Amino acid sequence: MSAEREEIAELLWQARVSGRPVSVPAVVPSLAQAYDIQRTLHCRCDLPVMVWKLGLTAEAPRAAFGSDSPVVGRLPSSAIYCDRGEVAFAGNAMFVEAELVFELGWDLPPERAPYDRGTVAGALKGIYAGIEIVRSRFAEMDLPLGLLVADNVVAHGLVLGRKLSTRWDDGFADMPVTLQRNGEPPVSGSTAWAMGNPLDALVWIANWLCENGEGGLRREQLVASGTCTGATEVFAGDRVSVDFAGAGGACVSLLS
Image (cartoon, rainbow, N blue to C red):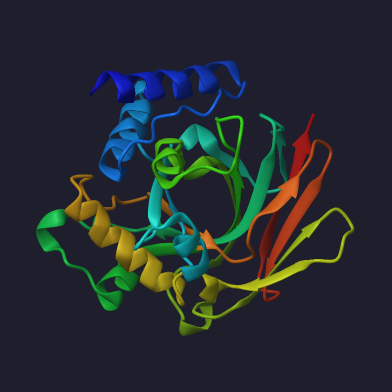
């Protein structure tokens, strides 16, 4: 790893350890370098990847970041929170997103790629309502693509909510979703915000992991398939809930 990449990795590691944001560096790594930084930081936590997080799954945010594809982050099991639990507020700003979460029932290894909808859907063990909690380790959220990816696509944690199904159903392709912060009017969205169909998001990451030396998806890993509602800023003391067309949801409280 180059000195510049080492410096960015060390900045991000110190931010993780201290819980305090760090200044945005002047140097922006390439996408390949950014994933190298992200991977290095995850290895330092000495825990396997339990959650793969997809970001930029809609055309508008991809265009804003100048990306031609979604981006990927990773989380260990220690970053998974129980439904109706509490999460400490951290950093300068935190945001939440409603996400459809997939659980793998068996491996999708590189030697069997490329994968299609049928094969990936058949590998599922469960489909859950989820709330992704995002925050930047940098002092600003407005980041160039390379720093966004290096910063783990601003992934902080995942609240795993109600199990909606044990298998894929086409009703999940365009399911209405709402997110509510405290007693405010809910934010409305759809599972279709994730690449037009969250199953396509799952197919995309299954193949991306095979093509990029990550070993493919593994049994019992989770995939947060992309925001269904956009990002909603939250503050200490807030309570957030999501609902997937009345089929089930998740909620979490933010502690000061």
